Image (cartoon, rainbow, N blue to C red; front, side):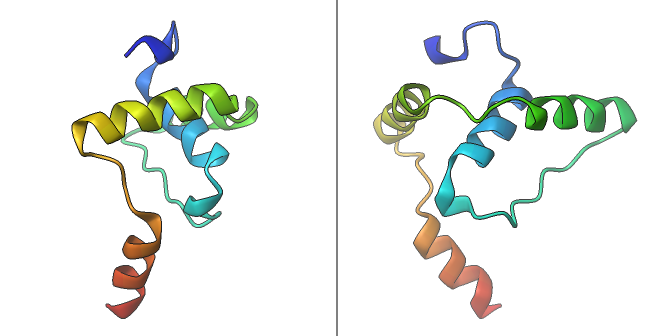
Length: 80
């Protein structure tokens, strides 16, 4: 994944969640330990991913059939 550059995967995921309005502010990002939580907080303090990086990530997800459908997810989650 070229769009990660030197970014750690967890940083990318935190910043993608922040950059994606469809994920809303209710996205829960788990941490396995205190150090992991610190990395998540540091990533969240950075700016959201640039639009071109988000677009490239979605192209990758589309190509692999892995892009989440936020609208479908929220309807399913709220029905539980």
